[in-house]
Image (cartoon, rainbow, N blue to C red; front, side):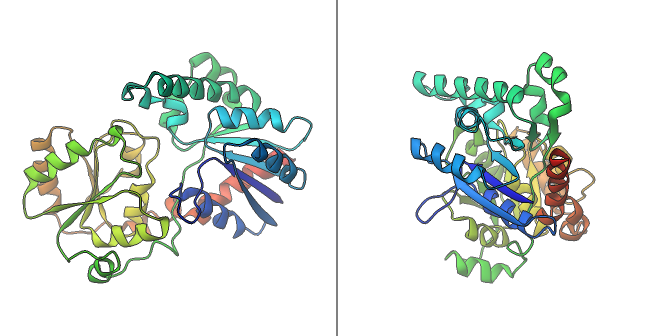
Length: 326
């Protein structure tokens, strides 16, 4: 089958986009049932609608990543092209929690419209993916009940070839930092929702010479080096969908300490060396210290491979495509 991927989040030279798209594309290409995977970015201009419609004529399945107003408009642009159309929501396009932190009325209106467009898209598209089941709780009950047959959980994954363990010293040298005890805090765009203030307070309480290593505005191919350079990852966001930084850390056998947000509880379920922590810095630091004292035994790179390796996850997605084509 031939697949078309579309997204308004994409990477290109000089632009930090969402790395999920190229990794999904590569994982789908590796599947024996897939003949080709084409990606067309939506670039916030009218020409994009023409480019997407033109590409859609020569494929079997159209899969849009990230909902909102742009995805809603693309559906109209594809009227007359009778191919299965899927849409996957990743977080803010459904929960819209950024509306609580922004002060701009114009931005608030944009976020509100984006969420309502996402809700309307549930009626229009053939299948709707959600990167975690926690996102389903933000959908109005009547809408979720009426269209529950369309909805599915589409977990994200990790490119195991890209995310490969290397010595801490080599990773630090690659990103030009001294070899120290680092706690990685990932914040792609510096948003208030990530709550860097809580993470800083926890690390201060923890002591033990730990230093925060902030990963912000980093090209996707550099992420494995930041993770390999750190001792553990901390996540303190007010809201998440299904944070991929946790899966990426676990694929490299790194410990993860996170507040209860998104689907992180599910991601860390059953692990001995990672944990859900309090938002209260003293309590969080005390618990982290106790868990760090336990020798590392999880080996999450192997024990979770069936759940987080993108190639395995892509196989389940291809099965959904095949059923739609039938």
